[in-house]
Image (tube, rainbow, N blue to C red):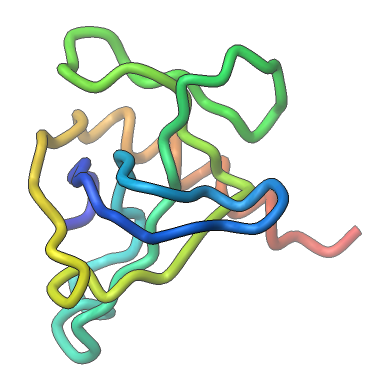
Length: 107
C-alpha cells in the first residue's frame, strides 16, 4: 500500500482541511495497515500555491497535482471504500518520506 495513490471520499473538511472525493497517497508502511486496517495518507491537490511541503507529483502518472505533506490524515481505507489508482516510483516515494519527517522535527 505504501506509495499507492487511491481515491477516497472523506466528507466535508473545515477550514483548510482536505474534503470530498479526492486522491491521496499512502505514506505509512505495511506494519501499520496490517494490524490496524488504517494507513497514513497525504492528500493530493490541484492547487498552484507554492509551499515547501507541497511536492509536485512525478511526471508520467495519471494523477496530477501536489502532495500536501503538511495535511496528513489517518484513513480506514476499507471502511471508506478506497479505490486504487496507481503507484509512484520508489525514488519519488523515498523523497516524500525524507521530506515529511521535517513536519515533525522540533523547532
